[in-house]
Image (cartoon, rainbow over all chains, first blue to last red; front, side):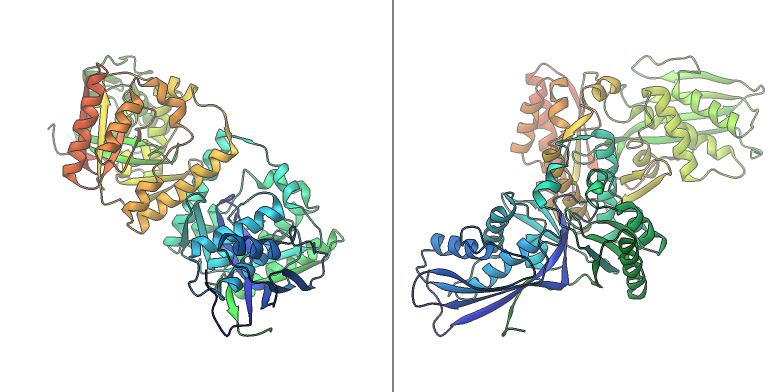
Length: 316
Length: 316
């Protein structure tokens, strides 16, 4: 595979994302464009993949085999027979183990930046495949419900990973609230608490809500969306991972939220609200409820963005 | 509750229906307008509910407490304080235990005919509630996935039974094939073979297909519908109830069917096909495949009808 000439350095941004969305365990997700990770790749004169700089509140592995960005770039170089070295600069704005798709964002930003160097760019399916490899390095499990909305933007449905089949759903005309309590829930642990068998009765209820959630998007029916956003399967199993979960949720619903549940595997929560003003009220209420549990938190409020990962002209 | 004056006799028709539709166990169903049950109610001079005549290939209970039609009318009279007797004439075209919603059709036809006598008619939600009572008498379980499409027509999603919340979905622009092999599978037995716990992995796959099936209806995307119509959860557990199931299914897919699975709890199968001509070919192929198993069968081919249960001006 040939590289473009006269290109020395590229920066890509990839947004955070909210997976599951209450009713779509492992299949639904939306982009949280208010926060994301930046990866800058610069050509080197050797063929080494070197992590030059990491800006992050959290400690990240510098070993290129364990670092998501380095592992993704190395994998792409190997598979595409590229013997070009890259220096990596990672600016991580998404907190580790926050349930906001941080490892997916780093992996996606890495491959999107890398793609810019290629004379013949990779397809979206290939980009997703490489980013999934990064997820596997980070979490030991290649789930696509963060990678897909992070790359493509909007609200996505992953029908199948192999072969890859993803669908961009209509974006609901409401606002999201993401509240990130300063707790860490390892994705591996959050997956381990989920039972491998589910009761048929709850499956029927959950699948009915999933189907009507999809209907609500196509019919632009906020009242149906509100009724549908109930997770009877996964949320009860994970609620104990976040102290005060039910108190925060109840406070959000009382403040007018259309629905509340975990963002991905938590500890972050997402809520939907009909207006920006109400979304801010809901966010503040949730922050106060977490404060009552002696837990500090960050809030992000916005509309679901149709923008996914993209090239940045320079460091912002 | 008052009755209309000058009305002596009413006949209602209610169509057969195909529940589950591969990916929507207990929540999806569509009307099969090509065949159905007729119920005629005639005023009596006493206050008895009397089964006067049943036309059916199968033996049906004449005890008013066990007969679906009589039980529904009795329940409605009791709840609405109506002390008027009715003579019942039932013409049953849907075979018993065929998986085509026969008991639902009889119950729906009964309450739709009865409703015509009321000065102040019942709401659709009330009609469904009475028909569900009939289902309970017949099957011991008030599932709404036949009653709802039978009453309303089209392709329906039952989000919730209590409180009742039903949605009419866009009808796919394709043809259905229903093949009824001359076997009987009791609904109770077909439910008993379903495990009460389901594997998480298959739940994720099935829910992804359900979501993309709903998308395919709204986007009028036949190729996506085809990919989505795969039941990994329920069908494998019921396949042994119908001898030759996989051979018949394979033959249908080879003949061009977009998807094949059980109609309700079987033994009938449904298939979708892109054109009427192909639907007839698929139906004939399935009939031959059943014949190879020494099983005779009936075929019904049509588009999904938007017509649900309705009043007939007189016996047809």
